[in-house]
Length: 179
Image 1 (cartoon, one colour):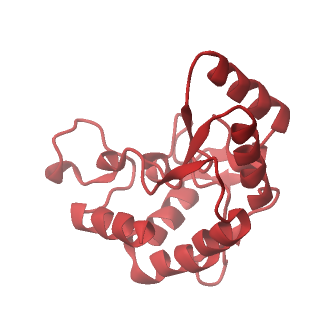
Image 2: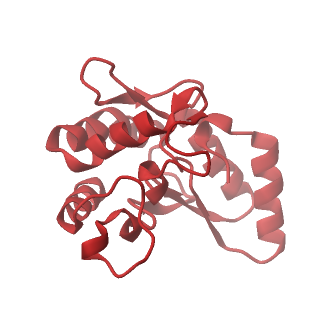
């Protein structure tokens, strides 16, 4: 349950060893749980890459560790937490980022054509180039728990994120990321 920027190879080694010993054959990693590791251009508000200290080489290292333990790994690219302020509220900060600002930037990234394209060009493509085809990569999950991000009037759930989008916007984001 660590974001890419807090990657700890010893912890990953321990957790994947334990998963393998318990009989798991595949694991899912929410490496980008809240979108904290996305870098945004201050003038455009669009994704410009990966924010230090996060590194796609750490992602590759996690896949190498999974392979050592005979595991496949699915990497989650986005989650409903991208649009959720969290327990501290919208005015609190996480890693020096005000939650409200993080949610607003992520919302723009997920719901506008320019935002989606910048995410694909400056984040997804460089990630794919860095990790390449890897024998432990089971696949990517474009969006985890996306149903929480859809406007309340369009879904049957009682809980939605702090910032929401239409079902059409969610489908467009997922379809574009999935390729």
